[in-house]
Length: 134
Image (cartoon, rainbow, N blue to C red; front, side, top):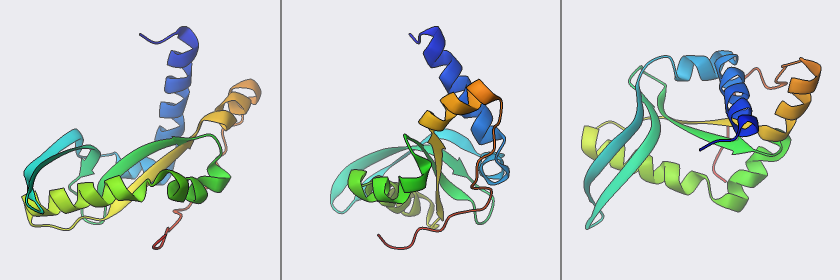
């Protein structure tokens, strides 16, 4: 069960994602919590993907929260965020015979407090950020 403060934070994060043009497009169509099951590399595997969008160039969407969005790429390396999405991509490709693009939507938790206090919800990241091989 969520506390009132936690519920408010979740609602604000949802509003933040819904207010971002690219995030909104990525989540405009598709399946939440899609499951892919198959034999992969000699093992029976399963993945629960945050979002799978069937529209071309959208594909797999993974949602992450971050304390600080400015250093999110460093967090991706430190916490190994690309490993699970690579696994999701491989399983979805094995099941569907289509290699899908992967997008990660990062939502900053700390800045939300400031945004709630000031009412200013700018993102500073209105464009996509491309992450090459890490």
